[in-house]
Every structure is written in structure tokens, then in C-alpha cells.
Length: 286
Image (cartoon, rainbow, N blue to C red):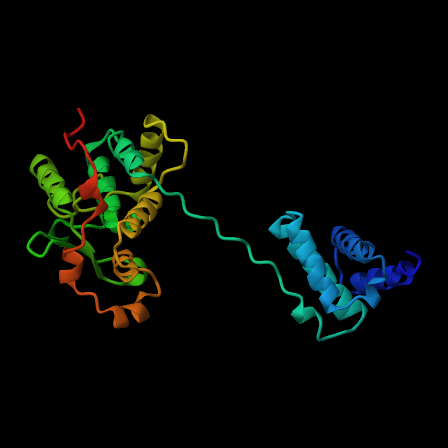
């Protein structure tokens, strides 16, 4: 590739002027060289469509997301600085990191997991998290007065972004909470911490999740957020309207969506929690 040498020298000079590290210089030179070799032509004779074709080629070969963007940085530098083509770099797009699908437990796995939680308080708290699709901070902050058995809803006072909302109160969960309250009599927080005036620490629930997952022999990581994902997935699979699920989960975009869905607490109260379909032993652990 005889035509590469002058461009290589120009690139190195440009990178030195920009004070790029030797490692970055080697990475950029290597990326541009591979780009040129792929087409068998000098890179200054290749254009934007060639860049896009090369990106597709790399993606089809399974090149990692981070490596794809290293190539993008090198080509942006080459076209924008070395060749001085100001309009091309901004049109060479970075690869977006693919979103991983959330971990979801099956109904049987939820039963195995919850029945493996050794502490009564943690077991009831995690059951509540699954039954209503709560975040760990939301279940930890629940107060006794937030449980509204008259309307069959629970008030989530400290949702994400400080937004208050209502969650579904399952018939089965209400029975579990009543049994738990008779045994423990929490005065303020439903799941108190070391002192009655403080809520349980989220770290305690995280630790309980890890221990229960291991005890249940589950081959997937389990967290409070996994229970939340499972709640939403199980509702969706049972035919619950996605707009109601959005309300129950309290997603960040809900302020716009809620104006159109107009889901009331009566609709929420009529929504069956997936917990009601489980055969779950609620006897306090010994």
C-alpha cells in the first residue's frame, strides 16, 4: 500500500500536534490501515459510503461495541484533521451499546426464591417488591399507613424523582402483611431498620436476595430490580394493558403518558398482582 506512507506521516504529525498519546497514535494508524486494506485502496480515495460499509462489515464480524467506536474515532480524526474534510466526521456515527434484556424469573422461580429467604422481614419485603413491582428504595420506604386496604392500593410516597404514585395491593399480599404486622407490630416503617424510626437499609435486601438465590439453586442473578422486571413481564404476559403497567412501575416518562391513559386508583385496585397466582407458603421461617 505505497500510497499510505505520506498519509501515515501526515497523520502522525497531526496527532503529535494534538498531543495524542503514543498508544492512541498506534491505535489510529492501525484502524485507518485496516480500513484501507479492506477496500484495497488508499484511504483518501474512500468516502463516507465506504466508511458506512466498513462499519457494517465490522459489526457483522461481531466486533465489540468499544472496538467499533475506536475505529470511528480514528476515521473521524483522519477525515477531519488529516484530510481537512470538515463535513464527514460528524456523519460517521458512533455505535450504540446494545441494551441487554432484563433478567426475568419464571413463576416457579419466584416461588423458590421467596421461600428461600430466611428472614421474615426480608421475605415479606421482597414479596411486596414482587407483588407491586417496587424499586428497592420504594419498598424500604413503605410505611404502615401507606397500605390502603379500603381501596386495595398502596401509596408509594418516595418514587423515583420524588414522584408519588399508587401501586396495586394484592389480596394475597394483604393477608401476608396482616400476618407479618401481627407478629412484628412495626410502629412507623413497614420494614424498619436497626431502630424503629428508620427504614430497612437497601443493602440488607440486596444481601437477602443473594443468599436466597443461592439457597434456591437459581442459575441467574436475582435482585429487587429483577423481581420488578418479573412483575412487569408476568403482568404483560397475562394480558394487562401496557399503559397500566407503566403507571404501576412509575417510569420516568409517565408524566406525559399518564395524561392520556387516565388510569385511576379504581383501575389499579382491579388489577390482579401476579403474586395471587402463586402457590406460596407464607408461614414465617423458623
